[in-house]
Length: 150
Image 1: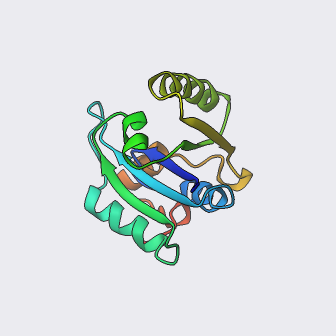
Image 2 (image 1 turned 60 degrees about the vertical axis):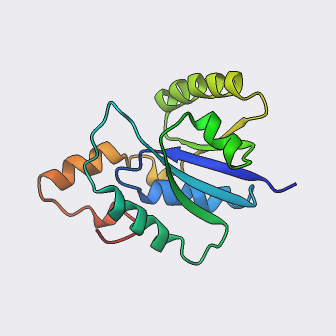
């Protein structure tokens, strides 16, 4: 049976830390679906079409990485795509507390779904999409944090 994982997030923007989680996740899974979710509480900073194109270019040599958008529960998305796993990265204990709660709810909603948490590589632990948006908003160069050129 093919091991398919969903890597969900808003990815506003998709960082080198996110890229690292996907590449490392490919050692565990046959296919990773990067799911860009719609969060009604957040307005996107970077245009969605641009981010999709940038992520697709980042993984153009990986036929087992797909990029999709969705507007449903992640547990439902996993069922729709035959995914048995949710892949997430952890930078710190605050991330763990949040991811633990989400994993518990996802397991309740879809008891066939397992969440796999990868510890962020140390060189990417300080990178956050929120920080990158703030740096970009004030005109500073964010290229060092992204696996593509905006």
